[in-house]
Amino acid sequence: MEGNIISSHRLLGKSWVMGHPGSEYKNEATGLYSHLEGIPKALLPGVGGKKILDFWWEVVNLRHLFSEVYLVTNADKYKYYERWATASDFPAENIINDGSTTSETQLGAVADFELVVRSKKFNEDVMVVAGDMLCEDLNFDIAEVLKFFKFKKGELAIYYEMEEGEKTESRGIVEVCPHTHRITKFSEKPSAGATASRLASVVFYCFQRQTLPTLGEYLKHYLEVKDRDLGKYMEWLINEANVPVFGMKLPTGFQLIGQVGLSEYRKWSAQYSTKQHGSTVKQITCRSYARVGIMGNPSDGFYGKTIAMTISNFWADVTIYESKRVVLIPHPLNDPTEFGSLQDLHGISQKEGYLGGLRLLQATCKQFYQYCSEQGIALAKRNFTLKYDTNIPRQVGLAGSSAIVSATLKCLMKFYDLIDEDLPKPLRANFILNVESEELVITAGLQDRVVQVYEGLVYMDFSKELMEKQGYGSYVNMDVSCAPKFWLAYMGDPSDSGKIHSNVRQRWLNGDSDVVAAMKSFADLTDQAKIAMESKNWHELSELVNKNFELRRSIYTDACLGEGNMRMVQLGRKFGSVVKLPGSGGAVIGLCLDPDNLVELKEAFQEAGFVICDVVPYAP
Image (cartoon, rainbow, N blue to C red; front, top):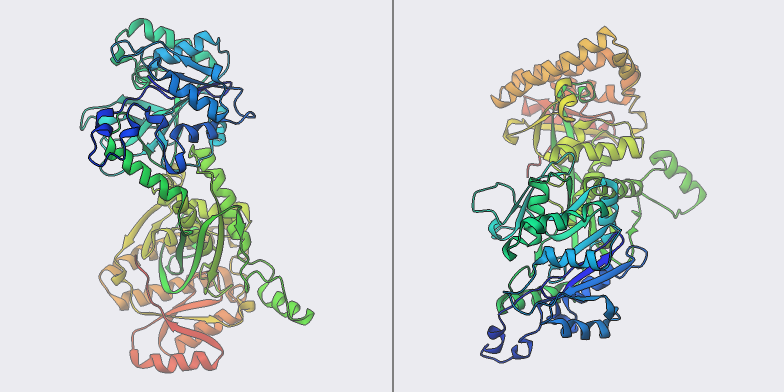
């Protein structure tokens, strides 16, 4: 053991003895690295001379979080750490020398840990960190780790998703319950194929004070040094002692674990240099598309079934990049704060309302932080600037708001290196819905969010048994070629889009037999439409689209659908198209089986003041 950082009160940080092949540095042909011979790994110089241990000292040197910080080393490397402490304002009296000088006489990590606990008479919770380990993201928020540890009221182990090429045989591998976050199994350096998990635990643990006596209990039974690695102790604590240990994920990798040679040091140095001195600010831009509901809507909120499709005609873009503070940039058109005159303010407010996209960004960020905190995902301590743009027409039922939320969530996940397993697609759709319905009290259903997450042509089953059992439905991507050539028309001024939802939902909740039967019929029509689309039976699909609209009309009434919507439906039918609403109102989609009618249809819509275009499907 060489350098171990240790602190008491909610933290015990350790950096253990680490060996590196000094002769490799000494005998390297260029001689550029000969001066590194004998230096402990935690003190190898990085960019500007900054060392791994400097990074950890910055992370734990927080008096409001940790009452004391200790560093454990062996006698052989003690002087190196003493000099480092003097130069780094680390209390030299908190360096603990375990007395060992060779691999044959070393105590082992667990014994070193127990030595500090016993000699300092700890009666507080403790965090343990290997000081020879560099987190790939140099600026994660350790306060979030402590917050989750306190919330779970159990031991805590940090883990990460291994990258391709990393071998599970070189790590402690954990299996974690996705619901409780409890580690169900710990395998220290398992043999190949022994576990399917690729969640790697690292020496980064939090222990409650009442658990510390188990260190001595473990050491009484395991006398050999090879059994005294902390990974072996954790394996025993979880698998045999059955002590509840929870897992918290850092969405990043860890470097320089174990033995390090010259090639590893060069790789780390280059990576560290890039992160510390990036020449440009990297921007991430994510796009989400408008959608059209083809069949079944509005039954997505009534345990029904729907088919919807993302379209590349319209989209929302969100851009994120690192900055000193969190900044949300208002859109110049959608979030106006300057007006040409009071009359201009009145006209814009009357036509477009007061709620732009900025609130969607803010609500998404709030819910994202809350989700990660609750799910045990420790985010990097990085701030960002967010901005958005969209060309989705407002208030015409093409899911413009959820597109902005969806694109924002994509950006946040990429910025903080979250992967699909951290927020799976079904839960992502629920997340987006919660941002709108719970955080912003926007009337919404799951359909839009599901299709914008899965993208393309999507069949959705929201049956009650599925929703109650797993919290989401069954979502299936269909081949986008199964969609015929729809046209889309929408109002230039959507103020007359009607009160689409009316009192139908309340009637459904009250068990109104007409509404309940209608929602079942919507689901049946959706299943029939899926078959018709997969067989490309456009005549059958046309009849189903027409039935879908007439069913909706029967329970909502023409008055609730709105005069403008009804005008578009009637105009489309005049030229031989079947027509339905693709969303909550303000737009219609149509299917015209006679191409000769399309030119006249488009001219008629344009002359009536509507905007019309061909639907261009989007499939990833």
